[in-house]
Amino acid sequence: MLHTLEWDLYDKADLLDSAISGALDQLQSLNDQTKDWERVIFEYEAAELGTREIRRAGVLIIFAVPFGFSLMGFAGVLFANKRMCSSLSFNSIRMAGILSAVCGSLSLVAASAFLSASFVINDACQMSNL
Image 1 (cartoon, rainbow, N blue to C red):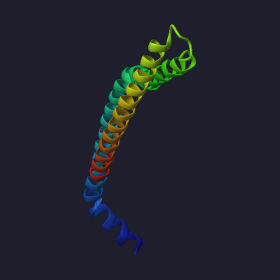
Image 2 (tube, helix red, strand yellow):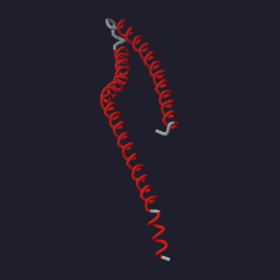
Image 3 (cartoon, one colour):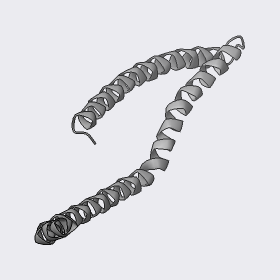
Image 4 (tube, rainbow, N blue to C red):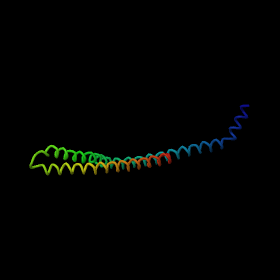
């Protein structure tokens, strides 16, 4: 019986050899594809690192500008009771209010746009299985 199994195995040696060769080719293809994906990820990470400081400065500016307007309004309130600064103080209070309203409105519009874009991009990535 062992002799029969040995001859059957010997007769199928070419089939086994081709199956092993095919499996090795598929593993090599998977390895190449993984290296390509890794290279693309490294390129995207490098691009993201290049814009990280700009994005950080942009977020800082988004918070610093309204803070400056608030300080201008507080200064207007503090100096409003002085005679020589009263017109300047009232103007600075009005200007701070107008600029704060504009910045607040623009912030809401920008946040809505960025949130909508992130939803679309996230859904597209989920659908394409990235």
